[in-house]
Length: 163
Image 1 (cartoon, rainbow, N blue to C red):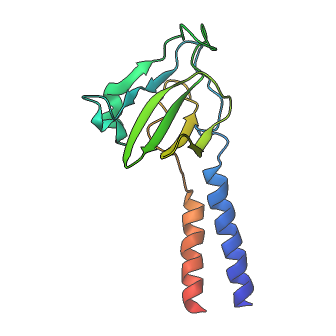
Image 2 (image 1 turned 120 degrees about the horizontal axis):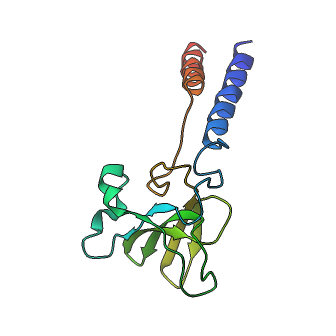
Image 3 (image 1 turned 45 degrees about the vertical axis):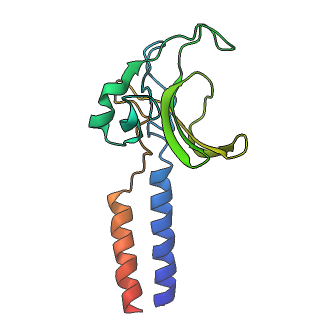
């Protein structure tokens, strides 16, 4: 009986954490409700002079990089408003940097998709959609755990000790 309770509690805990991490109401997974032309993103590159703190996840540090995304003037998406924000973690040979920018393509959130380029180049892409007039979503990954998930985890821990 104790083992089956353990399994049930484990299942409930995993379900709660999964449900919270894939929350359909989170800014990272919901299309933007921001009016066209009004998307604001952190825009910086940690390789640029004076922007080395672009790799921070502290919103107070990143605040100075909040900018309204411009319409593109050239290229495939010329004249298009930004639809979302993007963060790119670049590993080039032995050097890493962070680029935060506006995104003009893609209608789905992306959470750490790995891309490889030429030899020695690896990119991790994160793309998200801002919700209302909140801070730009391209600061850091968003992960929430509910109180219920924490309670279930604690109960699972206590039960495991008693087994």
